[in-house]
Length: 164
Image 1 (tube, rainbow, N blue to C red):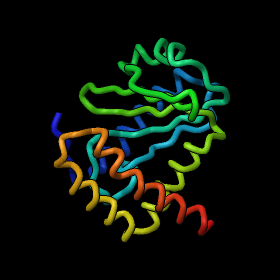
Image 2: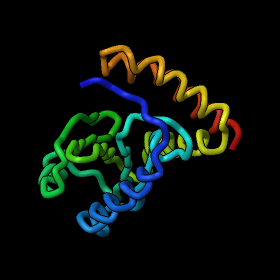
Image 3: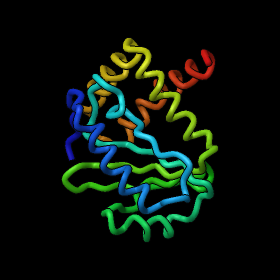
């Protein structure tokens, strides 16, 4: 599947809100936070048209538990790490969604929020990030695309943590 970076679409916020309502109904009191993360959550930032969400759980269950709960919404297990306590589900229907499930107090969740806030509050950093993604999108290797962005993301998170 060819990757594309689209100009920011205001509908991404609406899609997140609509999907998050469905997730809140499924998880009820099991979660503490549900966040729109990633590039689609930053106004004005070009992105792949994938709505990334993170959900911070009171207590993380195994992937089968979430697979069963998310089946009715069309999510499929994609990846995870027991070491990092993180599970990823994807839904590719009319719109694309990635749901990152992790403990509420996890380092990963905090870093995702810091990265989003740094992009929202620093237009120059957001512009550099978009340029990097537009350059990398031409490489037909999803792992390379992800790994090549990782150093940039880590540096922005580190900068955000030091300025707080």
